[in-house]
Image 1 (cartoon, rainbow, N blue to C red):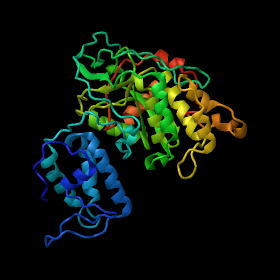
Image 2 (image 1 turned 30 degrees about the vertical axis):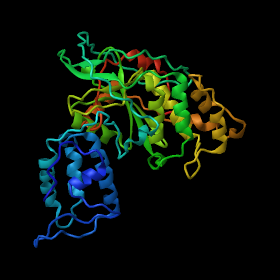
Image 3 (image 1 turned 180 degrees about the horizontal axis):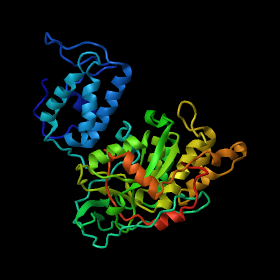
Image 4 (image 1 turned 90 degrees about the vertical axis):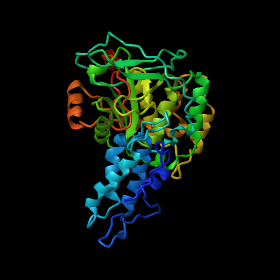
Length: 419
């Protein structure tokens, strides 16, 4: 199989990758296998598999290297060959692709931590700031190992929190391994923003019609951290979304080489929208890894925040989507537009007030708080998770900082609303 060879950098778009891999485009693929006469097999690929190939190519772009994307490329190789005659040819495709892509690395330091085929549209309203010079890291010799049995109750809905004023650029965080060798390095994702600036961006995101990926209902918002042997005193948390958390965690381990500990797992309608809102609200706590030691990706969905604040923020926005603020076409409903327009953007808690407010038109919405099932993993459950998802998620594994168990105990019980 002939594949383009004159490449110097990892492809930046799915269309470029498709051209490199010689995968045809269109609404329906045909088998890419070779017949005995040397012709291309023209058996139709199902529309479902055609769509899956497109989603996988989008994900592969974000992985930044052949090794990081090997499992996904192997899946693509099998999908583009018909089930009847040419599955054995998948290995030939993969070998040819490795020769071309094997030595390439992404030039982008913005590789995101998304899964389930999501594009990087997240940051249409969250444009990544210019990359700052990679800082000199330091070693934390007092890495703590937390042997305390963790409480499994998440943040209660009644707890109040206000947006903290973030400090200006802090020294980069480093998460050492158990033997004291620095492994994961982080830097601020961007400059500190004021409450008004952040809330203005959230308002814009709320009023914007749902994009195609945001219209999907059934999904999960997860919170995880590094394993107990890989934490420092500050709890950096990874916050993202997935349709299948177990698969996500397995993919992460496979790419980045460690089993993360899941701290929170929320049911979320319009989960891609919820993730954007959570990330935007936690702008000042956001960190970017300056090259994952496991896969080389600059993961950028890490947050230097407590578990209580993280689960509270996720809870606000999962509650928001349950209130059905968008119509069937994905446009914000008039009553919610009016409420959002009247919000005081200088108030750090304005969105909590908006989401949890009782309005005259909403007298039948008293049952909102009974729909969420927040699942907080206990120490035993985390161990089970590590066993079941022995392939850590492919997208972002970035910092491990000692997870403060006091954060968990402070979280109270969030189970009445946010999953």
